[in-house]
Image (cartoon, rainbow, N blue to C red):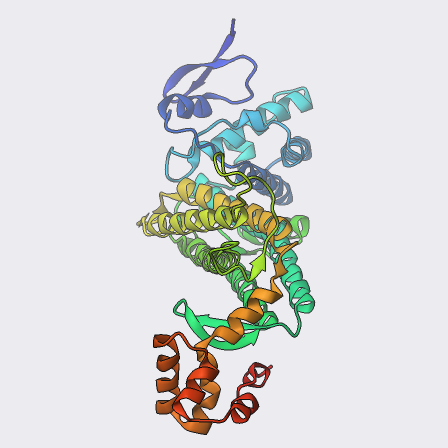
Length: 457
């Protein structure tokens, strides 16, 4: 049977389970916002701990707290950063739009654990752990720290892995010619390695765009406090805090130059989310191309083979499906949906504060996590093991009527088009159609129609 203690605040008394390290504000949030199953991301709690540690050190610098208080706060924050006490952060995403209750959850847990560590009551959630801060600047600062760390530590390495694997495929497939396709119709030839290089460049461009967006994420709201004026915060606090965070994370955080912008606008999140959506779009295109090219194996394009990772059907024996492509494209759709929610949420900056920040935090965390995981899975379970079906590529290449394009300079566009249609309507090869129409001799056709001469490297 649970035992309780009584916590008290300006609204009165409230029961808290005796073994919990939170106080009244966390408990009130738990009871007032029983909405959904989505909890504040662990990565955001980790970032809040980094921020609270840096704020404690800055407050010590400005003589707002004692060395003993600072030591206790730093010790607990570092434990939280190491993954301890996550069960003490139970609050739902769907709470106050400023994230105040999550900030207070952190303040309460750090103060209770810090007092236990110090073996005396030296920390107060508001007066010491939250000194020189407001939820209105701590939550957006933690949000920026979370996004910057997660992208650098988790997403960018997976993009590098994918780029490396595609480069490897380019090298393995050097010199293989295949038919190109536009509008899902036959087009002129290209090297398979060139097609692959397009995929690689898409991921390289997405990576560069994401990195470019981070310069705005590195701007932190620290020092803004309640409405951007910095009330109850020492002058220069923002510089000290961001320097400490930069040294700890090895990322170039700086104070936002306009604190009013830092609180009310979430344009940095919109920009970065847009770059993530761009990556999702590129992943969607690549995955769709690969499942089209692998379609069949008897009644589709089947110009490539992809790894057979698991049975594809509960009723059709031996069927293998492009499941990694399907997983990646589902993630792409989710990220696109998240981006829409983030954009709408960012538009809700009413006067001095945005009040959709928990939503933005949850969706940013999910988008980065899903893209990181899905790209890793797609790379190791699909791209690694992808093989060209050279026989089918060669057959499709020489059966294509669009090889007629190289005859434009020889017989002209009109005759070339007539030959192509004549071949299609009469089920002839292109060569048979050209000879049937008397446009070229067999020797002339073989001289001019050479796929390898139609490609520029």
